[in-house]
Amino acid sequence: MNKGKVIGIPQALGYYYFYPLWKTFFTQLGFTVKTSGMT
Image (tube, rainbow, N blue to C red; front, side, top):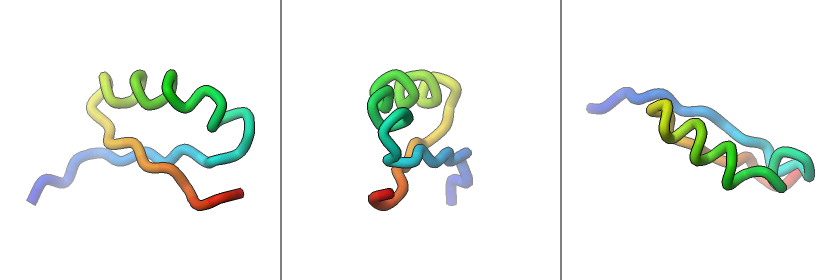
């Protein structure tokens, strides 16, 4: 089983607006990116 690193991004306005940036950034660092439920 692969126990890679996972990071969560909240769906709050400021964070979610820049989601493509954060997703690319953290994916390049080797993280799996997940979003929270609606906030």
